[in-house]
Length: 279
Image (tube, rainbow, N blue to C red):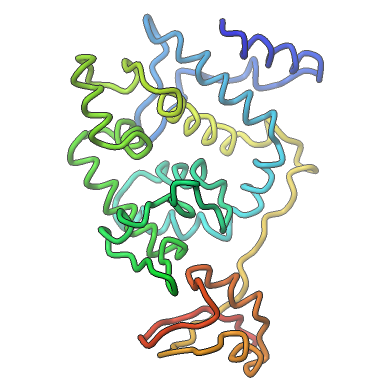
C-alpha cells in the first residue's frame, strides 16, 4: 500500500469513522458503461480508486462548490450529450477539468469547462479572438467537445480510452498502447496525470451519486439556480457598460451571463446575448 494512502487512512481514523470505507461496491464502479476491473491483476485498481476518493473527501469545499454550481451548467451539458447519443458520464470530464469555475484558464492557455486550447477550439468551429471567446459559451463549447469526443471514439472504440486520450492527447495515448502491447486503459503504465485521470472521473462520479454517504444533508447546501434570462439580438456594441445602463441592467450581470465576451465592446456581427428577463 502506498505511503499516501496510509497517511490518508490515518487522517480519516483520527477524524472519525468514514462510512464509505466499508460501503463501496467496487464491482459496480463504472464510467461510460465500462466497469472498473478489480479481479486478478486488477486488484490494484481498488487502491487507485480509494486514493482519489480520499483526496476528494479531504477537499470538501471544492465538492460543495461543484454541487452548488451544478444546475447552472450540467443540465445544458447533459442535454447536448443526450442529443448526440453520447454517454451521460462524459459530463464528468468538464467537472474535473474546471470544477465548474467560469474563469479557469491554464498556464498553457486552455480555457474553461472543456479546457480547449485556442487552436483546437478554432478547429472545432469556435470563435476565439480578442473580443469573443466561445470556449466560455456552455452550449457551443460542449457541442465542440462532443465533436472531438466522437472523433476520439472512432479511433479508440472505447469511452475510457477516449477520456484518457482527452487528457493525454490521442497520439501520445496511441503510442503508449502500441509500445506496451495493450488495448485497455487499465493495463497501461502512464504519466502520473493520465494514470490518475480515469480514477478521478470514477471517484467524482461515485461521490456525486452517493453524496449523502460522504456529506451530511445539512452541510451540503442548496444549489444555485440559473437566472431567468432572455436573448437579446445585437449587431454591434461600442460600450457594453453604457448599453447595460441604458437598459437598466447591471454591467456585472451582463458579463457574468455572457463570459464569452472578452472586452467592453462587440464588433460588427449578429450575436445573441443573454440578459435578465425582468418581464
